[in-house]
Amino acid sequence: MVEDAGARSRRGPYAGAAERRAAILEAAFDVFAQHGYTGGSLQKIADIVGMSQTSLLHYYPKKSDLLLAVLRRRDAVGDATLPAGGEPTAFLDSVLQQARANETVQGLIELYTVLAGEAVTTGNPGREYVLQRFAGLRVEYTHRFEELAACGRLRSGISPDAAAASLIALWDGLQIQWLLAPDAIDVASNLESFIDAIVLPPTRKG
Amino acid sequence: MVEDAGARSRRGPYAGAAERRAAILEAAFDVFAQHGYTGGSLQKIADIVGMSQTSLLHYYPKKSDLLLAVLRRRDAVGDATLPAGGEPTAFLDSVLQQARANETVQGLIELYTVLAGEAVTTGNPGREYVLQRFAGLRVEYTHRFEELAACGRLRSGISPDAAAASLIALWDGLQIQWLLAPDAIDVASNLESFIDAIVLPPTRKG
DNA sequence: GTCTATAATGGGATAGAC
DNA sequence: GTCTATCCCATTATAGAC
Image (tube, chains in turn green, purple, cyan, yellow):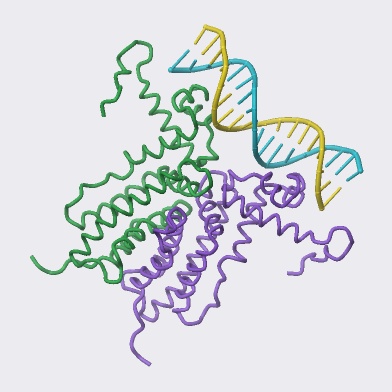
């Protein structure tokens, strides 16, 4: 985490190259969320941050660099990967908590939904990232469901990795329906029903 | 369904204006599936069908017309809405059957996934269609789950409309994971596990 | 670091000849 | 119906002055 943050406070005129990059990312986030990657333009992003399109390319030489940067920023902000090894139920609680929190950041969900869809198109620079993200999420969730299965709390007939893939899929699918009809869909409560259906209550014992 | 199909067999030179339109639609289908709506171009479509870009516009004056035509064609071909009122289980069987059949038409799933994602972008001409399609599917599926609930076969704690939205969401979510990692995801078997978890076996009785 | 200017390409759509 | 020619606009990216 050290890197060369020394770019700041070195010389006078340009206090905040990092801030500039952050502002660009935020603008790119909004533009890509609203118009998608293909539909979003560097000019729009530059307009928002208040610089020329060419100046923007000074920070991110290619459009695809900007996409990957936006996708990676989501990691840091998006899902706060909770500490492993705790109560198995904590995992499920955090999923529902995250789902409810997501209702207040529609732009984030929009971004994710649009870019995930575009990721399957040929030559999309975000494809590998999205692919790896799904794979990583499946691995993580599978571990959690394995813990639950070890406690005998996963319904028989459902494997941990099937539960993982399905929970992720359900979540994504509910989000797109929610984006198109916010009043008709309650993402969190649907997830909760699903969880209740595949996860058994704890066995009685102090 | 009569319309003016009489354009055919009227005069000599142009036998098959309808065939021409069909060929255009097929090409548009492929291009939009591969590149999305924004990323797909009229020129690519025209190249495939073997005509100039301007000739293409003679049949579909605007790009958005082509998108809507492609989306509507999906209705006729895609989901063969099975006859209502039969065995409640027939509905679930047809879902699984359709899911398995979809494995052989990856292009169709690609098209649907990409266009659904793009539909949430601002100004996308397909938004209303996709929105209505989700709403329509939810209504239809809700009815089927109401039938199951009437037989006491829907797990308590799950409402018919929640089951409907979740089944659709799960299906869509599994498909995008499948597109990115076909060997890691089995859409149909995941759907089956979900159904088994929320639908109870028939009560014993002749 | 930031800009103007511009290259190089591609997009959707129109006009009009045949 | 189909084409060529063209318009006009937008795009990403580069060159080079300051």
